[in-house]
Length: 65
Image (tube, rainbow, N blue to C red; front, top):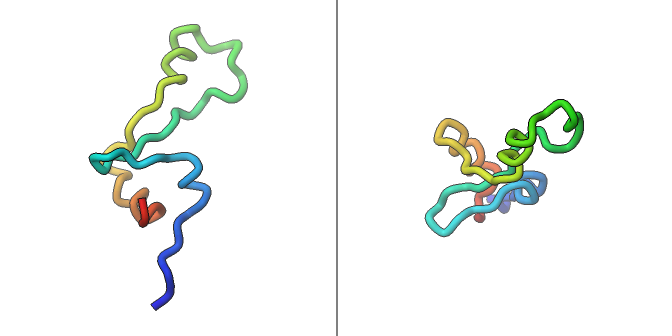
């Protein structure tokens, strides 16, 4: 049986919390920022948790953590 490999691109973008949730950064903060409001950019700075619909797919990418 081969080793289970971690997706390195996913591991650099997401972290697993102690309770098993997966934290990620929000998308949309790299360019075209002048048309976005100050409030919207402030909310984009905050991280968020991966929702349950995508959690199974993300756990497949991050089998070891």
